[in-house]
Image (cartoon, rainbow, N blue to C red; front, side, top):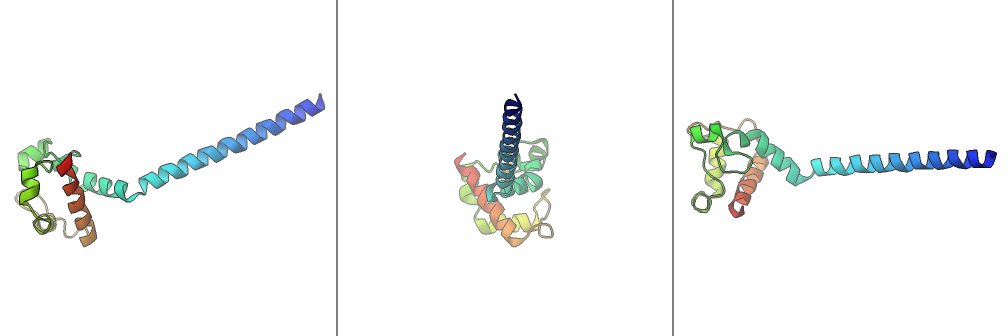
Length: 122
């Protein structure tokens, strides 16, 4: 009887350790996903651009329609605007779009341009 109780305690302890290891592993995987470069740029776009351009890049939010935000999925827009022009607009603003030169680094702006280019195939 005492051996059975000891075996039960050992099984419970081992099960708890395995469970804690799985929980910790799962938390680490979620942190890695949040820290991935793709996730960071998506968060940056959502924080700075999506209010007007939408998370889908179509510019069909209330603010985007009011401001005349371009549709980043439109191949005509993508073909017409070169990377330099996009960078200038992000840095200096345009019409109702605010300037981000004091909020974003040059690398963040370049990364946003790459992200915007990714909407073309959607």
